[in-house]
Amino acid sequence: MTRIFFRFLLTSLALLILQACDVTVDVQTDTQAKPASASVYRFATFNIAMGLNQAGEMATALESGTDDRLRSLAKVLQIVRPDVVLLTEFDFDPSIEAADLLNRHYLQHADEGMEGITYAFSYRPTVNTGMDSGLDIDGNGQAGEPTDAWGFGRFPGQYGMMILSHFPIDAAAIRSFQTLKWSEFPGALRPIKENGESFYSDEVWTQLRLSSKNHVDIPVQAGDQLIHFLVTHPTPPGFDGPEDRNGKRNHDELALWAHFLDARPADWLVDDNGITGGLEDESNFIIAGDLNADPHDGGAVPGAIAQLLDHPLVDSDCIPASHGGAEAAEQQAGINLEHSGNPAFDTSDFNDETVGNLRIDYLVPSRSLAVQDCGVFWPASNEPHHGLAEFSDHRLVWLDVSF
Image (cartoon, rainbow, N blue to C red; front, side, top):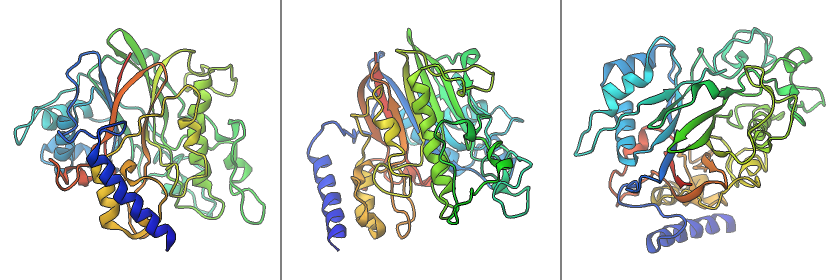
């Protein structure tokens, strides 16, 4: 009861503080207006929750120009106006030019007095979700199920990713780690059953890929500087058993970027083109994605996200916040009142009886960048555009940086 009261008090204080001052967690109630300065660059990440049920549904939605979720997505991007944005749970379909369709049928069309937006550059990495492994990964005696793909998925490309950018992308320098084996990761948290046996057979463990979707280093040329946009979408730490196989995989998927930042020689860290090693010293970077790990609450392995937030090369001082997140936790109550994290920092709106709202979407910048501002697009009931982002169970997170 004491913890519930404390959570209620924390939520109420968060609302009062955010309304009373304009400090590190500024949320710009004037619709998250982007600074006019040409030297400030806005990055964003947004899980749009369009991992649809069947292959081809995303193509149909993009080609129609009438999908309500994509219309809402367009409005959010027109309001926040990021220069570079990662969209997760955007199904990968190689048969269509997804960015062109999204630009032409949705982003360029402005309703309700807003201004259209167009992205000249884009990139869609391939993903492990829905890609059949040919193995009985879940060990239930039957192969070929969604749980037997390299990453959970009902068809190849489900829960994919797309990057949209105003700035050129150095496609030749992109590095991906889609095929890196989990067993080759130093200190890998191999899931163990309660009886002490490995959850995965040796046959599966030696072949299982670490990345549930992909880990991709995308060099973006912002002005005269290069920023490595490090994008990923680790598996959620749930939907498993006492062996915590998804929680441990999530932990190690996050740890992969921590090792990548260290830049020390590492023969095991081999990208999909056979190039070894991590990021070069003194590089600008931003780690982006739905990372599925809250610093305080939820089911992640303790310390999972701290591997990135506490990394010596990372500047994690600016914590994205919103009025809407604090308001939602107070109004929805349930397990939200038992959480210990500040609800103003939440970026997701989940079941209030089982999981509650969590901070799981991140933009993690390098200390070589000058962070100007950050926020979560989650307007409260007394702010413009309230309810616009509710087509997804996540909220867009944005970060303004300069050099």
